[in-house]
Figure 1 (tube, rainbow, N blue to C red):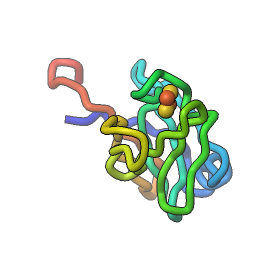
Figure 2 (cartoon, rainbow, N blue to C red; figure 1 turned 60 degrees about the vertical axis):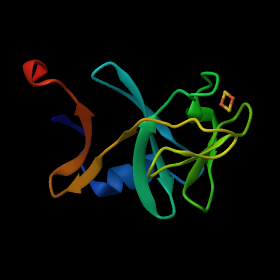
Figure 3 (cartoon, rainbow, N blue to C red; figure 1 turned 60 degrees about the horizontal axis):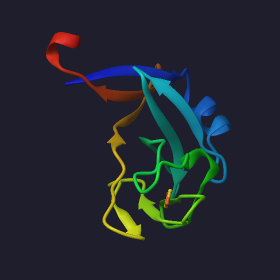
Figure 4 (cartoon, protein in one colour; figure 1 turned 120 degrees about the horizontal axis):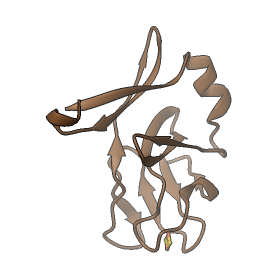
Length: 114
Ligand code: FES
């Protein structure tokens, strides 16, 4: 079950704030979420690198739809969260939806937290 949070009022706002070389970090329900653009699509993944905790906000995205950690250069697939280089780590991924009334990210919650 997801709690959907509006992160931008429009697709244009998303495009203006999240560029291929500039990610955005938002705190949603206490979770630090990195919004990134890869291969022409937008994704939401955990902000903290699972290898050693670096902020992926300082990293960059590749043309292959990956985000690269700035510290040890491990790469993660933005869609699946799985490491594509550097080990068997994985990022937590969040669904991101572009709707008529804005851009939303889903944060998993227990039914009693709704
Ligand atoms: S801290 Fe990110 S790859 Fe090591």
